[in-house]
Image (cartoon, rainbow, N blue to C red; front, side, top):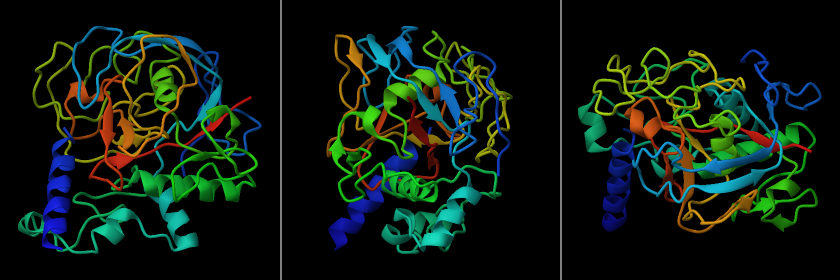
Length: 329
């Protein structure tokens, strides 16, 4: 038991070290309009296409996984929430189901020595953080395993089949059969890594950040701007907390906070990029799950839309959140 506690504390420390009801949105260009007939009116329709995925600007930076080789990816159309799931939205799910997040069950409500020294007496979770959160802030301290249960609950709310086997994390088709083809999944789900990058880059444009810009400015992205170590960083404010969703301008598709604010979970696990064209890529293994987008505590390099984070199973931190997606015909 002592060894397990030491390992858990070490993982929490490493995770923290890596941290370096919303209005409808209408996109500003073709492929970025809110789908009028969607069962979830807040989702934005992202028209599919082909793009070059990876470090297209040749920054040469990397986090946990390589961003090369740059390779061609073809995607079908999909729907994506313009915002990260908020505290209010996640609380509704918890209140209706009695669900307990990994932060609540694994943390067992007990603060670590380091937390107590900072004035905390209880392990934080989406309901109580080190900083103040309102209903409109993104829900954080969310594990991947929490996010897929939320997605299945949301699917049931709208009469859709579940997208995940909650025990294995595998995707399910409309008949409840395991599938590796994301196009066969009808329920609400997390976006794939490729879908997210494609949308963050405004349908595959060569841009560095999820707001369509190539320079990170603290008045446009919520990140740690205390240092301007990169050529693409403007020095400035470090808020030390999340900001309400929609606090900054969206990208051309009407998607907010695709860079900064909170890490976002994906359906897939991280794998090395292939050196060939792929179509609707998706991979799931036992090594962990992908998160991207950077967060309030990341430097600008972590907020680049090509930065790849592959976190362990049952892991969460002070900035892990998510946004929902659906396959579109």
